[in-house]
Image (spheres, rainbow, N blue to C red):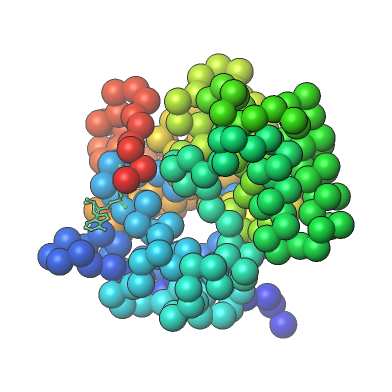
Length: 248
Ligand SMILES: Nc1ncnc2c1ncn2[C@@H]1O[C@H](COP(=O)(O)OP(=O)(O)OP(=O)(O)O)[C@@H](O)[C@H]1O
């Protein structure tokens, strides 16, 4: 028998008062896939993530992880199903070192011995921050902090990782390193990445899902999506360079 999709939503909707933030979304992600989610400000991308992690309950429709409905589960129970998320809200303990932050994260769902092994592997190999292992995270640059935050997420060994604008505020080399890191992490975890930066999308994307007004407008390979007139109209046409949202 075929495995169920890693994530599947059916007719997923959430309304805030009269506002349809997410409207009848049918979305499916296979094991190991890397999907980019794009769309103009207010399209519903962040809200969609919040439905997948149980922060919001749908008004109607369903979310299943590995074929299992997440209806009624708390956010920590959904995390335990293997769903990890990096939001734009900083989540590091500033007064702790890089290693302590990553170890504590691993320890949440692993034994002490396993957390030690995972912390070493994440820091030395996976995010490559060995020289900063004992540095307080408060002392790190923006780019380094973002990579530690990625390390914190992968330390729990999630099957699915949701990333909300992982390259926000980055340029040049930092942006390239983040793209390389994501591709590397994708060898062991499926990912959904929300990004506004088209250069970044082109570096990492295979399939792109475009949201507009709470609905899926187009879903296709990156070149087809970027050439699509409807996408240009709603998204690229308005794009005047990098946009950062507040993550609120
Ligand atoms: N908790 C909430 N209560 C009421 N309205 C909300 C809530 N969260 C989001 N919205 C509204 O839902 C719509 C979708 O917002 P959302 O943040 O999901 O868009 P987005 O695609 O992530 O945008 P951005 O690219 O700016 O982050 C917006 O109109 C927003 O104002």
